Image (cartoon, rainbow, N blue to C red; front, side, top):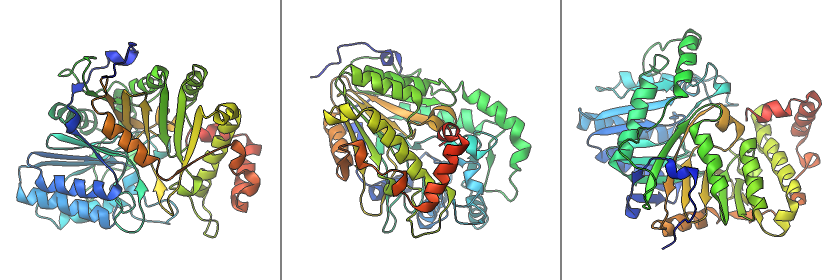
Length: 447
């Protein structure tokens, strides 16, 4: 039995008791797809799907078909799909003019005999300044939590996958709390509208409602009144936040501050929020061993091979590598003594989308938050914090970390990372313009 000897601010957070066998870790994206489809097919009471987007492709069609089939089989089934308002009404970046997924949602609705409502949630008046980054779907009494959206690459439908984390938590109180937040905080707003209708309102007519909605979201929280504070038992703590200094941001910083021996972080986009960077540097000073797992720039979902047409978004992986190299250079001594370990993930032409925090042998954070300034300031984010003071769930936790490390390579020195002169000419030109215009800090705050 391993007890955590020191009280932290995290002890005051309320959560729901769990048993170790009520948490299942799914190892692959294909397993996640099968899990979603199996749970949808067997649902008896409720299905609340929440994602940044539900894409019009083969995987998206499979999920939509499964939802409509479940509704036909059990007409009293409560089914709701929630996606980001703006993301649903535009096409893929770099793919030219497209009608967006909203047109598909409507087309599916009019050819069916039942309704599966799809709601769009606007977090800001423009997508650039904030999106619905809330994760976690409720199916009956379980919460299926992943940072993945619903599309072919996220669900590994064909030859490529985008790796994420996938957890299934069987806990009615948690499921009730997640559903209540969706119903009360999101669907109850005048800014939220259905997208599976012939003419959703124009975004510009919603600006006043969206601003009021965002203001109310800053006070939103999961209902944990049926839970308890630290009790010495395994429990899960749901967290939500938007804007500066929100409860989720504070919990993230408190997690890093609580680390005593080992801290592990995952992010696909290396651009850590400054307040988080400061806590990491404090942890290094007190002797904590830190592992950070990042996708190689070629495993970034924005990466475009140099022989393909260049787009502005294709420069993002290089922005992140520049930040990583500067961080590695600053902490080269800690890297040399293996106190700081930077691990680059790469598996063929697949991509990397993992987020999360592991602290000592006690805390595990499931989240869609990229740990970057955008996640800390602009997007609506959430997380499930697993508090395991007696290491009841240690084996599955360690197995997940071992699985994540399979395709990683440790960065032995900052000099092993590429520099500006190694980048393709269009990337070099863009990065030089950014440097001359002195807008790098502004850009990093929005990426």
